[in-house]
Image (cartoon, rainbow, N blue to C red; front, side, top):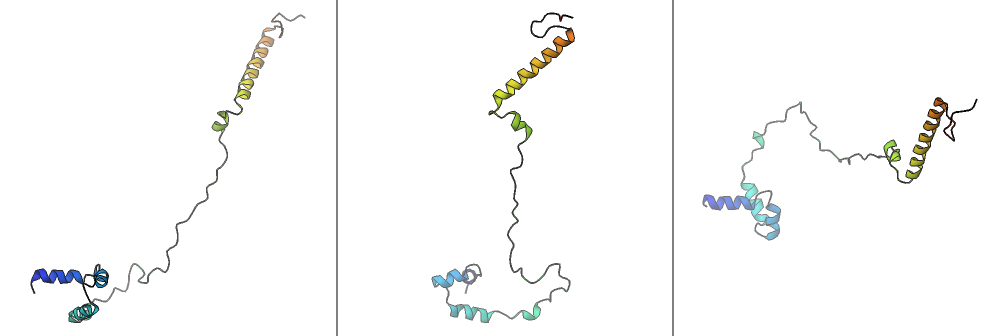
Amino acid sequence: MSSEEDRKAERLFDKRTLERNLRKGLVSVKDLEKRNSALPDVKDKIAPPPADLPFSPTPIAAVLPAPTYIVSNGRRDSLSADLDDEDEDEDFDDEEDEEDEEDEDEDEDEGLDDEKGLPEAG
């Protein structure tokens, strides 16, 4: 066999494509057993694993789902309450009332009658 034929044969038995090649009939189970028996035994050359492994050699039984967090809507902030359109007219009325009260306070300080703007009698 040439080296090109060897590479093609190795591709047929590649672990990533072996199942597909078996289903397609490109490789038979008999061919696979023959190839595996021809491979050299290397189990004596394997180094034992170190005693102090940084990880557990046992596989993880189950993977836990990611935690879910419940988020509440919370309270309305004061900014959104100030900009609320439903009570906009009331907001303007409140501002006018405050201005009227300020004017009345100024008039009292100046000694003027509230309704007529005349000096108070007395």
